[in-house]
Image (cartoon, rainbow, N blue to C red):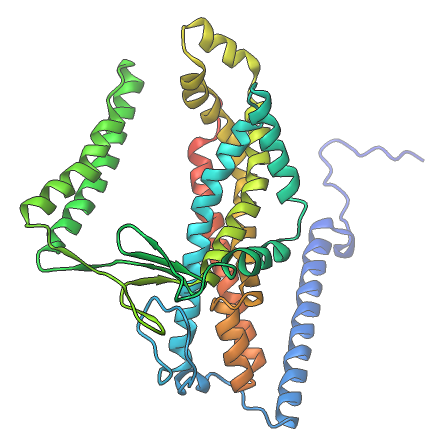
Length: 396
């Protein structure tokens, strides 16, 4: 019997349950139903358990009086503020230490990563020792070391270390003069904003001109003048509208000034130094990924090692560095939740700790905290992906 199809005859029909496209859709619908059923079951079980234990649910606790103090606040807060206000205080403290940690870890990591490739034996071995020591010690132990063995070992209040400029250092923290803006300082801030926008616009123009004509523009000097020089000139012309509130040492306390609590300093030191060890390896791998021919070509054009590294190697290495660097930024932000171990009032310590213990509404408090960390991570990833798309290699 012949199985060949006659020319022009329609293809044989396939049963719908054997159609790969239909089966794929059916499997996805079935998976969604299973996931929805699991979520519904978990939510129903949680609600039933909360009702049985007579624990209130919902977000009505948000406007209740907190009744506790927080040692570091970036916005006004007292023990008569609400739980919602305490949430924002904890969130801002988390963003502060994470933002500063990312900046310091990036700077230190790039320095150590480049030092790992140095031909100087001492510099190379010192950088290797740093990386191999720091990244192999648990972060929690490092935080406890900085807090208990370094900062808490400083002199007490009576024996405070006096630093020129009205600065006091003791085991209660670092007390510095606090700047206080006076009338007219708004012009300086406005000038600074205009200078930043002008520097970005000038850099964009210089880059376009260099692509078209090959001529370089003094971007650094012009940006320095716009961002630093211009606001400084306005500051002087406005009569220096800025005063400082100097801390005054008393018998039992230091009043006034700006206080940096040791918990914050220990957390910032630990996160920055720990993450910098991983960033250093990322930077080293990125530089090694650039062909050595690029270096030889730049030397043949008469460029010195410094400009070669800054203008030729590092820009190309950034395409390799950015993706793992994003992961390190996310790790640093999430690792900031270890602040609870040394008493720093971050989001976890304030909201998931004190607020949860007082209200007993674990589901709502933990869900909000998880949503916050998820949002921070997604925003960080989005910004880094945008930057990565700008520096990635474009094939012609």
